[in-house]
Amino acid sequence: MSLWVGIAVIVVAMLLGGLLIWAVSRKSPEGSLADRIPTNVYAVTAGAMTLLTAFTFSAAFAQYTSAQTAVRQEASAILQMYRSTGFIEEPLQSTLRADLLCYSTLVATVEWDDLGRGVLNMQGPVQKTMIAMDNAISTSEGQKLAGNGLSIWEGGNAELAAAREQRFAVADWDVPPLIYFVLVLGSILTLGSLFAFADSSKPGWGHAVLIIGPVFVAVAGLVVILFLDSPFIQTPGSVTPEAIVETVEYIQADMDSRGLDTTPSCPTDTAGERVFG
Image 1: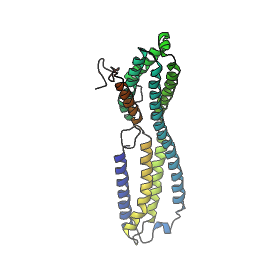
Image 2: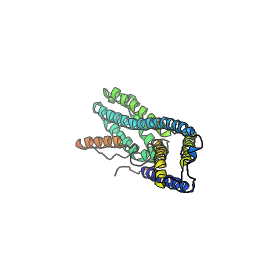
Image 3: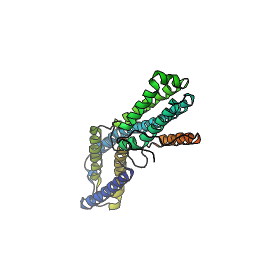
Image 4: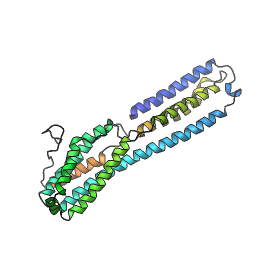
């Protein structure tokens, strides 16, 4: 759920809750139902819902922070692999540097846009770039040219694969629909029990104040869980490829200072199309 939609839902829910209990209180008899029926069930239900919401929030927040960590680790691995090319001889050095630049840019653009839309399949251009890097360094000639940089490259490559796997695992993880159903139903029942306190002898604004707080807690909890459950959606506060973008900028600046081409031709879905302007 996007940030602004979430805020709008919270505000509307609070206003509707306040208006509804105000209207009910005007039609209620003097003396609330709470004076005539047991209301301990409200405390039990509210406590149980608080625990369930906290547990779900904790699980969703863990996935959100895991996504942030995966992006930082992926950027770190790219930087380690790029630095290892300093120990690799030409022409393999230029090939790997261009491939790393392609990979980083494609991930931060094409692949990230798809993650935000919930598309979890690895994109063709990214896959082609990864295969190209592996093929370039896996041959006997490539290993010979890699020399001392091979072990550093392979270490970064292993870290890159692990970070990618973690990133896709987070994108594929969702709070089970059953949990959402229970949270919504429990919130409705808990908030509904507050109407037992409606009393026409008490001021309407007091009833509104009584329910606005619980409505905010219940609805805000659901909105935050929905937000954390989709960490790559494009909205303020979401997980962004900023760390990878910064790595791209570092690689481009370093290659530019060496007089190297910073606009390599990268694989795309349509032949001949370039991702660099």
